[in-house]
Image (cartoon, rainbow, N blue to C red):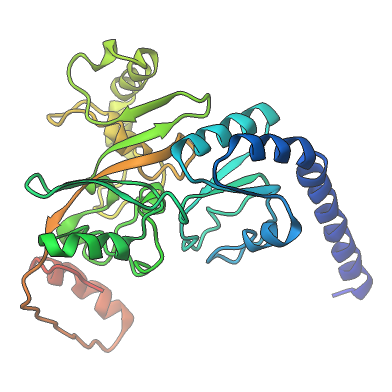
Length: 318
């Protein structure tokens, strides 16, 4: 390949990065940083070092944000969202940064929930439910639940770092999804803030939900589900571990009541940002464990055998 062409591309890329840094960072930094420092109880970072710390996650992407808010309360999240809306700046929520597709990096404002918004707020042992803040790490949560004989069973491989908020945003599934399902199956309700600043509890709707605030939003969502029910039924993949895209099928009328929290799950923060999540817990598995290791001559043979292994109803298949 022509050497001069490569150097021109590199120079152009460097120029664009400098332009982006000025347009998205330096030009808006003074006013926005002063406002956030006044309104935020948590930490606010607009220095180059801390912005660089949040420029990467577990993916291959690297994008330096304009600033970082380490939220201490739900009010901090709301204040950051208000400021970004008025500035016309993107806002990205961040938990453990364990996703490999770049969901937690952006040129706008990063809001980190993992340092302070990481508490177990409520625990109903008899009802097997809990309310948690979005920044709580899965392993930390399960350590708190273990003395009660309970656990949260969406056991992602990054459990030592992944947060419940991030897992809900991605609709994570874990290796035991055959038994316990995905995040959508284990989220009961979400306290969330919409882009316009409206805060609400998104949960299972009763028959009068369309007459309750925010009535216009609920009515529009239910109308969308009714209108597109045939298209959704025809085109949505009929697979258990469908974790990509919006869960529009959650709006389709069925025997089960509509739960708007299931629409937020998997939306990766594009429909709303969470401040609290109510989750369904499961009893801890019995100590007895059986592991079967199967060997196959080819990868294709292993794939073909998977359907027969699943028929045996194992807890997990890897």
